[in-house]
Amino acid sequence: MRKLIITVAPTGSLTTRAQLPWLPITPREIADSALEAYKAGAAIVHIHVRDPETGKGVQDRELYKETIEYIRAESDMIICTTTGGGATLGVDAMGRIVSLDLGPEMASLNCGSMNFGKAIFPNPPELIETFAKKMKEFGVKPELEVYEIGHIANVQQILNLLDQPLRFNFVMGVNGGIPATIENLLRMRDTVYKLYGTETQWQVTAIGRYETPLCVHAVLLGGDIRVGFEDNIYYSKGVKAKSNAQLVERMVRIANEIGREIATAEEARDLLHL
Ligand code: ZN
Image (cartoon, rainbow, N blue to C red):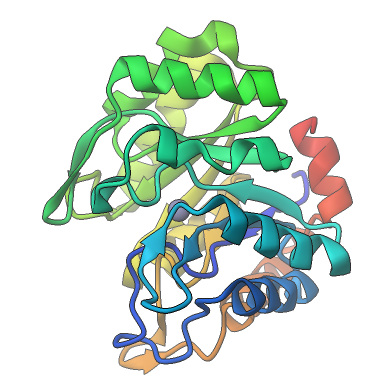
């Protein structure tokens, strides 16, 4: 089985300091948390930025620039910025792609619309295509975010804009998306393999208490994993995680026990054809 690529998602745009007082907010804090996770074994950082005053998720080019610079100054971590974050908070389409010309190697590309908690997450076909074109223009590899099986099929509409290997992220357990069960994970994987071939790469992102069990299954199945405060703030029932690195460390430990080696950032670059 090939080496395991671990992504850390240090902050997202919805988790709050009220839920987790040590949530990273400023570019320096987000970078430090990412770097700590890098030392623990994360090869990719999935970045959102926050208004340093209010802590709210924003799409601010300068904040992305600063965060990316801090991370690049001290690591060779793969940068994957969000183009979805803020959409449920009312950020417009062009605001969602402000980070693409800053040289991230990857960015999230959300492949369908849905309810998202109490909000609507709008990703109509025209917008998906526009974002995919922009990513191609800037040489950014899309991470195809799919929150349900229908989203996997939507990717057929933009296949001509994508380079191989395709890279999917199965986001499971969002209120409004596919429930985070093992059966659903297998169905997601099988659908991807059937439509796009077995060379297609995939990662699991599971929300809250589903993070660890679904990531463990992904490790066993040959997929990749994402952990971090964007998706989960608990280490165990009722016990909040101390850091993003702590969540990475646990998965590294489990993967090592199962015999799945961890990819460095450089090895992940090769695997992803970046
Ligand atoms: Zn995100």
